[in-house]
Image 1 (tube, rainbow, N blue to C red):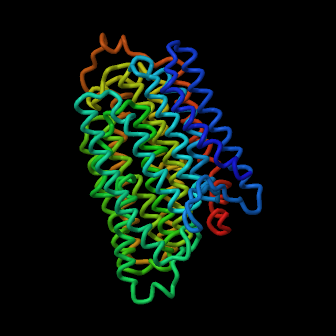
Image 2: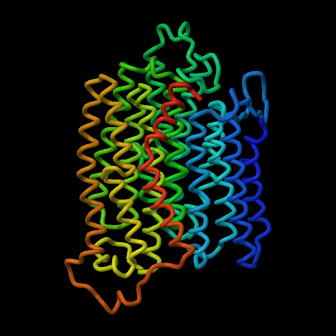
Image 3: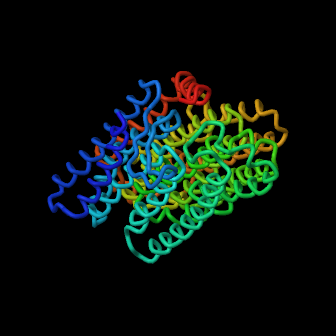
Length: 494
């Protein structure tokens, strides 16, 4: 049982390194290797999650022990199950899409080598038992995804890569300060629901610890694109679209939000932070980011950059819910994490298909494209309604849970967050509808000759789109069991 938690991580990293070394020349052999590696990793991950769920207490798996206090260890708890399941369910689908998408982009063995290794690294973040292990995989994620961001190696890609590296490493340095203080004032670095601080040691040092928490929040928040440290995310949209889908939906930004979740509820402790100036500082940052990201998305005509700013806004829905520092806030954050992942990965895959098959990247160029690419724009439209929050789709469920948590927190400041969610929903409606309405119901001149050459991509790309769109709808329709499970995760600390 213990080593089952490590197998998907170690095997995925090893297979990714193996692909970069072997460099198979035949496309069919390479694609079989890639898809087999991802499916094997996902299968082992689900097996570990199910085994942990069936066990009364999931045992820890120690990979490396440095001393009695420091080790690299894995243990799957309830939050690990949620994040690990998101990653393991979506990674194979986006990989299937990527095999066709990347077939003309070059250097595929190098690309998919880091792609496969990144899968294992993200699972390391999900399955980490303590802050030291989380920090190790958090840093490795930056290094593993950097070559993906810089894949084209042109001037824009190199600039985006440098910016991503500087932001991520700088943020991680501030996060490390928080871990050091948890070690000094805590009883352990192991994740403990309710926090690890020794209250006897915190007496008289509350202000210092609150300040350190704020630093650590923004440190981990860099990957979650919290304002003003989210500037790297829109620039990273120069990467191949499958990479954008991973950055925005599954891997990097969700890893940042997940690390913040651990920091608040399993590190400093919600009870220690609730009502302090530190709570209001981070909550205010999340509220401002919600509005900022949505407003920038509305003003951005480039499709992928618009979706990037949309991610900036939606990730702060999760952060706002976490900063409520009540159990219902944790449930709301996990709920929106699930639905946003399914919705945004679908939208980026649609964006990639549009750009690749039509050559059009700007929204004002989309006149009449819907009828030429009905599958792609059908999936995009469904996902857009979900992101807006039209009942009963996933975006509505996530926002409802977050607003409910805000009311239950009985914190007057939280009502500003509800207001931000309402304003963001209005802005989201505007910046999403201007995309698909223009595609389905053109209002400007339509170049019919150019449109005659545009069509939906082949099954390798459209099948994952349809599956993702349908899965998002089905998941939303059966939201009650999901929410019950998430509540069990929080209340029973599974």
